[in-house]
Amino acid sequence: MSLITSPESILHIALHAMDRTADPRLRTLISSLTKHLHEFVLENQLTEQEFERALQFLVGIGQATGKNTNEVVLAADILGVSSLVSTINNLDSSGASFAALLGPFWRANAPICEWGENISRTDLGGQAMEVHGSIFDEDGGLVSGATIDVWHSSPVGFYENQDEHQEDMNLRGRFKTNAQGEFFFKTIRPAGYPVPTNGPCGELLRAQDRHPNRPAHIHFMISKEGYKVLITQVFDGSDEHLLSDPVFGVSKHLVGSFKVDEVTGVCHLIHNFILQSGEMRFPAPPIP
Ligand code: BEZ
Ligand code: FE
Image (tube, rainbow, N blue to C red; front, side, top):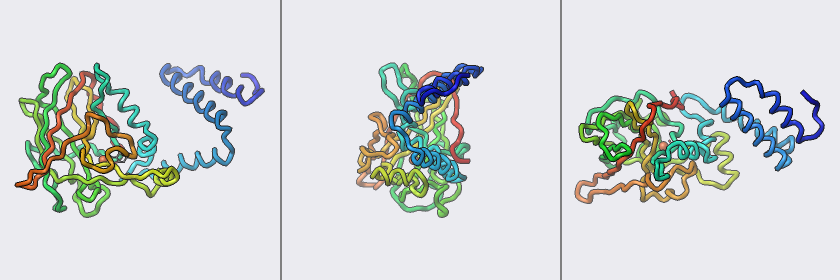
């Protein structure tokens, strides 16, 4: 180990100290992160006060994370990092991605539902909605027996875990595709909603003069043995915030057509998905 001779020399010494990291991927990632952080500090000539503020932000997002929200995930989301990771890991052979960020509100073990079941189990009013779709593999074949895990916000924009008026697991459910690779469920039309703004991420959004409102959407997590788990969202194409999602989740393939039947008043969405071959691996739930 050598002695520090200049600000720039610290990076070299730090990287040398990490050389013995046994796991090669960990060595690569932490070395690269360290290099970028040192470059960031030098490029911006970070002051001691700014450094202290940055550390306070990190402590703050940890402390604000709890049973009902995950501010650490939210921080990655509002910086566009979650969307970037999701996109680079789910590109198909034509360079398209049908995936979107998980967000902080997925819960494991949503109720298992029958074909066509209604996941709106608490009467919240709102517009009735029916969602249909088909699941394809990369060769255009239909995928039967896939699990479609769905979750979304209420007609006033609250997930069940944020709202004492909704029963546990309301607006959440797991469905199976039939022999033709199709799924069908009933629900109520979700509204857009603000990402949580009462913690450090809200403070950052305000400092950046950014609004917190996500366009209305339904989350999907589609899985079957032999395929990569597809985590995605389908957005209401008529939402005013479609082009200014604070977490950068809206891509071309994920704009849905929420069509209201003028006779019945029911909102219909038909959306198909493509699964890629791979290992079926589920994420860790951001909230319990
Ligand atoms: C969501 O879609 O559930 C979500 C995603 C990012 C931040 C907040 C909420
Ligand atoms: Fe959401």
